[in-house]
Image 1 (cartoon, rainbow, N blue to C red):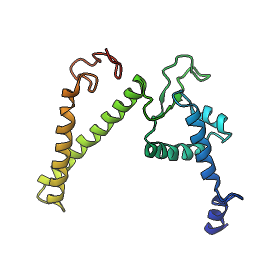
Image 2 (tube, one colour):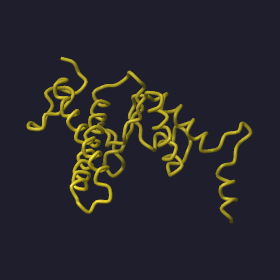
Image 3 (cartoon, one colour):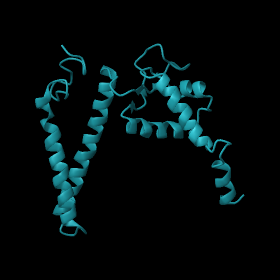
Image 4 (cartoon, helix red, strand yellow):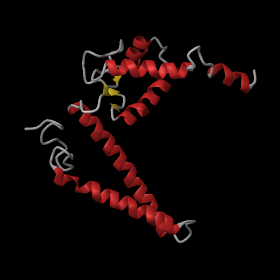
Length: 187
């Protein structure tokens, strides 16, 4: 079978002009919005939209994450369920996700956002370390460009480090390892 026949088969449009992938994304988006705020696993989504739990479903969920971000909503990252009742047959925690509409966050979505921010800051620190090294390397192919990137990363780190003045709910205290009070909950 040639590549042309394969691509024609996967992108066939129905009578309304939609591909199967487009219909999958629409089904997943509608189902997640109807179940907003609930912890759901891939198995839950698969059962809800009648798509087999596999690459087709995972592809649709990735596209829905982008669409949600464009709408101002948030599709959280998959994390182990906080609910002890949600265990698979081997008694392992099930990985779940939540769709949160704009303006409907809680302490769990705030923790997810802080986790994502910490991961991003780790990447920025790695970028700063690498670009600073290359900017100082006399054999680098682009010293001035790396110096500019290192300066931008340094400014980003400095700006984010200043978040502590926003209040204790915004940042985690590094020396204690605990929260002053739960994120997103006012005293």
